[in-house]
Length: 118
Image 1 (tube, rainbow, N blue to C red):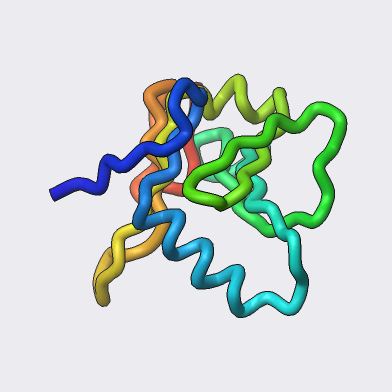
Image 2 (image 1 turned 30 degrees about the vertical axis):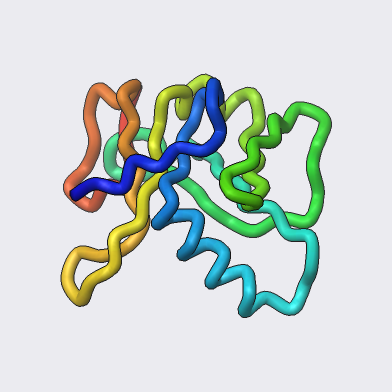
């Protein structure tokens, strides 16, 4: 069964409950408080653009902030153009587990799932 608990109604991105739980688990290991999860895209990767996730302490001028079950997520306007409609999910497991991006804007993506083209 797919985890479809989407808590930020009307937002252009979705972070599933399982992804929120995993990010919060990782945040608990960080030594810094008040961290955001930043989702971004960058030129590169085998399909032209690659996804990026990192922790950040600073909200910038062109960032949009979203809240998913208390997890604060930042996406800048440039990245939001490519990520609109995207769902970030997490699946555990010994083989093939990890974070995944389901991006309806991607016309092509690579086998590893970390890059795409629009």
